[in-house]
Amino acid sequence: MFDAYLMNTWIASTIVALGAGVIGVFVVMRGDSFLAHAIPHGSFSGAAIAVLLGVSPVAGLGVAAVIAAVLMHALGRKGHRDAVIALILTFLLAGGAFALSLSGDYANQVYALLFGQVLAVSDSDLLAMCILAVVAVTVVLMLIRPLLMTSVLPEQAGVQGIHGGLVALTFTIVIACITTASVPVVGAMLLFSLLIAPPAAACALSHTLGRTIALSCVFTVLCMWVSVALSVVFDFPVGFFVSLTTATVYIAAKLIAKARA
Image (cartoon, rainbow, N blue to C red; front, side):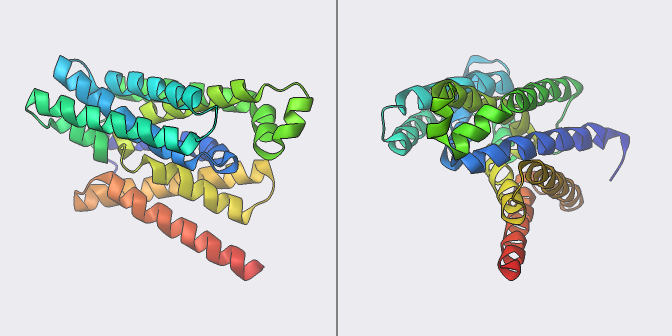
């Protein structure tokens, strides 16, 4: 369980969990759950095209995540945001499937990006994850007041001179960064559950921002550690256990909140 070859896995899972714990709170507060669902799924097309071109799937995923984030923000500003996000997501998924069909090979590395690969974290992957996660969390902490204002009191934020559109664009790119950092471990299909369920559970149990973020990080780290341990023991993709543990935490938090009420 704690052998030397698994050290990168434990470190990477902790980095991913802390990043998702901080950023996920604002995803939930801003009502950006569909956006957080669409960016990881849409970025799959970049990995597929990278396989077709013979370059790193993770690099392709990162480029596609940023492009998808900018497009979803820019085209969704004039209304019908969910419809725009859904159309872009559908187009990207279709493009990814088309690229894989051209390559003639549903490569193992693409499968790993879809469902997570607990044992495939190299030193270079770990460094890239760490840098992206630190950048994403740092940006969020630097923008914590504008993010909070535009999430809770958007009209008041405009009066105080906060540019809501710029804040939204920056936060969308932050989601793209945490997607690129997290997908190699968690998988594009189930990163959504890590970004949403534990932060939503924290929001249900706490009503102050600092405590909510701290509780969210505790939940995400706990879910990731349990998921990694179960993945190693049973040799199943880590994403399956992430989905299971995060759903359990969310349901438990809602039951506790209801009991308190």
